[in-house]
Image (cartoon, rainbow, N blue to C red):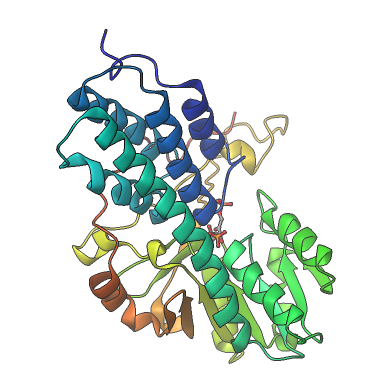
Length: 330
Ligand code: RUB
């Protein structure tokens, strides 16, 4: 049996499972993890046909693209890599190297982009700002930490719990480790606290061509409250978080996760339908600015970033729905 049809490397499948069950999570980390999986896949191929190798890499990319549907960073990373080897000619080693080089390039680019966003984003924060953040975004944390370390020592942060998966705990721990004063608050208390907030800083999973920001569920409510209170709403997003397909009219698929994340199976809510969307859409008019690694832009410039700086149009579609809509919990 050709290796393209054979079992894929265990380590690659493990990465896919970890993304699916959120042991690897956050749009940037997910993108770097799929790039790493492509490297592992390429290095593990034992056949000798370039065409069969391409088919095998396609199978790996399909498995990776079926893990979670919303973060476009995953699909942009895969497209960046596949664009390099799909049309390439040459022997197996040439093609294998193209995969490995492109994947390494993506990982390096991504790590540097997060650092650069940290530098640019940190300048927007003032020395005694009270910042509110939601979920767990490395780009957002990078900007806050960088600002704090560059002598803006008065910065303090309100972190939402981010139910149902409590990613806010990870953020609170990371900020505390850097010595930043952190207060953890329930998601539902955001309006109560907004009067004390100077800036909201969040990350993004996807940014659509019209500047709409898709991020952790609850983000759009926070944006609404920030708008009401006249508080700046800043999004930290690498350029590979911008979705080229939305320029061509495609909608962003919002992941719905298992109801058990919201209500434990042990509860006696038999027959109650539970919905668990993982992300929501914040319209551009609620976004003050998007901080990218190439500079700060208004959300209305999203299409320009896609066109001018563009990551290739993603070839990969998410093929699996995580959970049926309206699935009863018991
Ligand atoms: C994570 C989330 C993060 C973005 C940006 O959702 O919504 O805000 O992915 O993160 P989940 P980063 O926990 O469901 O993956 O800046 O680290 O890419």
